[in-house]
Image 1 (cartoon, rainbow, N blue to C red):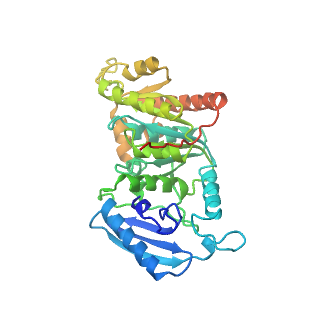
Image 2 (cartoon, rainbow, N blue to C red):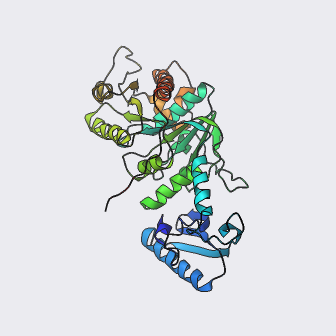
Image 3 (cartoon, helix red, strand yellow):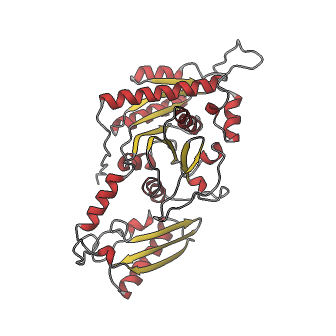
Length: 374
């Protein structure tokens, strides 16, 4: 976020790295937070406030309204023996950060990224129905919408309430259909666009994993935004993904981008569990013997075979899928006589199977350290 560009003049590190920012709240063009200091220092306070305001106007919005306060937090900057431990110069802060990183999503057995190379292929529909399909088995399931700019999970889960916060200032996920879920769409006005730069977005995604009471989960499904950008890289640097599911339609323009998505996960050593083909074909209700491959035939199936990954299943183009998404009741929870519901059950079972194979044959995925060369 913008505050990573504000350096402490003595420690020569940014304020976020020094853990000096507390109580951060962002609402449209208003932002408020507190700068923690080890001691009273009027000159330093004024300097840091000015630099923070400059960074916010430069990296977030030139018209942003900020309310920045300072506070002396003596206990925060003391070591275990009570001696002064200035941020960035002692071991205490580093130790705390290491412990936080170790505990991040430690109660989640499997973290599954649902991704696509391009938008409009039904990735969120697959993510929601996969999560609900997994929950149908009796598993403990979470669903995190990491698409900050275009969150759709609240509509698909028919929930628009704001989540509660614990006494430890952690968000409590909403719960419906046996799935715990969270989305930026639950925290902002649905009519407001998220006009955020990359650092703000990646910071928000990290907070969704670090500052949320997810509890014990068998599966956490991550609904990723399209492409291979900041959020995808942030995730693989922050948490060890167990595997990825790639969603595509059969048409070539979608398959080209799906291939790039597979390549990205392989490059960062995240196992690809398989490919899902959405909008595979259309069967008219009045002509059940007819099958029309509107976007091409078996494109994703053939891609999976060519690149040596699993084909998890195909989902037909049915009106009920669209209606269930708009009504906020995933089709996998409805009438299993529909072909789409049957397909999502099959895909969920295939994902469970591939996870079992992956966990048996491979070591747990490790977070990666991406270094950018100058």
